[in-house]
Image (tube, helix red, strand yellow):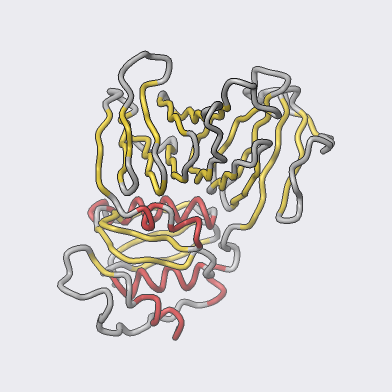
Length: 299
């Protein structure tokens, strides 16, 4: 509870007239340990698929090499080339991979990366769904392309974050360092260039592209062990937590879901700590039955 008190000091309703650096200390709410025993933080895990349907389970100590064997099979894997691989990170998981060109990719929960075992001489191209952070190895004569839900990102060497979950209306591309360009996939339309600290928002429904100025540390907080929020709705926060802790949730009052917060929660904290922080800092209450979380107003 004391740990929760310290962390909760940085999480507040959006619009509260309270400094994040000097907040008033709230009173901790005790959550029985046995209520969340099956809801735990995510771990390092993934499944590596071949186009043949063969697969291999991966954990924290399982490097991906060309000599890996694939004992399992599945027939519905969506790969089109014998040389193509698919790294699938489930709910409650995360994984880092180093591609053959030394590019590093961090995959968040419920994300997939499709990539060739060996890149072609003229370009490097991958496809992402979910969320990933890229640290691209710079090669002047061989650009790196990332495809995601109808959008193509071109980059030579930089660090950036891509978020494009199925339940997101938009694909968000946030540049941390370097420079990248974006355009609609398969079209010869003019490219839009991003500079560090900017985010491109691609609407999946009407294919429009808008720009915003953001703090990259907020967007990439998940890679550094924290959930960081700036004006984020409770529904969006719960979606992120549900992917990481692997649970289902519902609101008893739809109005609760639109409550917005600023602040952060440690990513590797137990679930009791996470919900205690939210309860302390908002007019909400959690109840847990098995793997289902219900969010309501306090009684």
